[in-house]
Length: 344
Image (cartoon, rainbow, N blue to C red; front, side, top):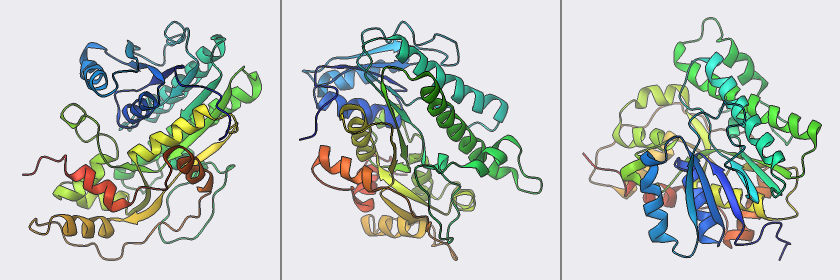
């Protein structure tokens, strides 16, 4: 087996631990004997997560600390003391104001790496980027991205919404610019400052699958998209903005984060956590198969599949190393997710 840089019993600090990806990352770490200190805005409002993990992982230690504003300089300095690894997952979501969203992401990311650099025990750092930090999805067009690909188009359109383009696209452009600018800034800082830890980034595609505590988390992040497809609500708008992407199961994404954190041979890598491409007709056909008595919206004519070629072999290798098997299939992910939806 490859050498571990961080062994079970190590204390890992994770931001955004009450979110979709953050909760799954904490879950996978705790299941493997690592201890987790998670940052949230308000510990009291997220107390349900401590209850969940205390019941599920009785031999591992989970605690939460409050970081109300990740843009405040030094916000992580005290709460990272004594930790061995840092995973920065928290990110602004859903905003359309570039002057607020993008600096929030960048400042939060730089505050995280600076705090980690000031804690001598930190050996490893993982940043949760996004597939959209590497390219702007263009379904039906064949092209290739690699470890040096950045979504410069997203940056341009995020800062300056193209004249003549509908406002409906503004949110996706601003999000693309936020994730791209943040990851680039963090790699630049690490390259210039040369801190005492290994830095890796994970670029997940759309996360689908089981939500750990749906009664408290609802349908967070990209789960909202597939929930809209399930109910038909906002579906026309959804298809207009995103007609095809790649997906990854929530738990698989978390496992890849763990691998990027703990294995000594994973160093200075951008890891593309892409399982397979999908379109909405494929999603709808799976829903009809799972729930033959339920009425779903009609298939959409003219959908094109994302034909981008991505370097996801390393992510698959790490997934198999930790999990013992490959990608969770789209139907399995959707089935676990749908079982949690409250039906009308």
